[in-house]
Image 1 (tube, rainbow, N blue to C red):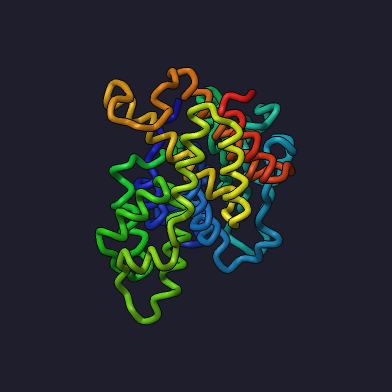
Image 2 (image 1 turned 90 degrees about the vertical axis):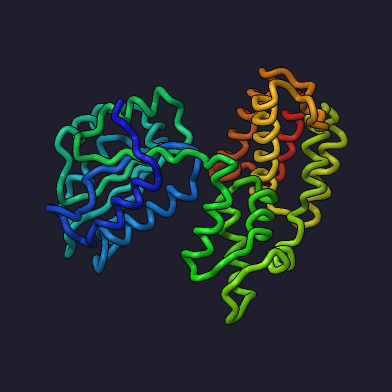
Length: 327
């Protein structure tokens, strides 16, 4: 299995890449493979590569996006082998690369990838066996990045960097509030920071009061109530709380992110303490198998909310019933 690099190393690499060059030092790699759990940094990297690969080029003629579950590897390889039009490079993106039914044509292409194309393989959330299958096909010239979900202690530093990148400073209280309230979800944190930026006018320093005024409490008390009811197996109470949150206008993806963070923290607390002593959540009564099952349900709901025709309300209702042990 080819060794992956961190998102920090990837962005260091991309910072050194000059736009539009097809060969030589400072050029983009012909192939990138992105795996892992943190979509925010993967999306940022994808945007940077797109801008650099197609700098000044007509995108309609040089950008192709495929989805693994709906396409054949031969089609991806054919497009990647096509010469760019009025550009140094073309860009081919294969999302859900782990969902390809047959990897043979892709494997053949990767033995000698075109230097006139940047091929990006996205396999976010892929299991380890599919990740290994894809990474083992990569040529030496490829870049393989695994986007780990940041650990809790890393979140405050990331929040500060997000603020600095937009020309703002942020005080400790605001950092702590965002880090705790949004359970380490970087995409949600960035979105909430952007809301704060727009409210500050000429001021460039963010206080905790600014964050609270902009974002409110994110429905946190009710989400905690929802988590506790589900962990205690009280399905009626959990569903009732969910319905109230949705009626109040809370977005399903935001609810899912905070809910996932709550359960992740409960699991981490059990590991750190060797048990649930000191944790008042009803989840302390759940065996390890139930916690693992809960994470599986949360991941399935995340995929469905982002790429399924099922109405978000139904996805969340089923999730809450599953977490409550109703089925």
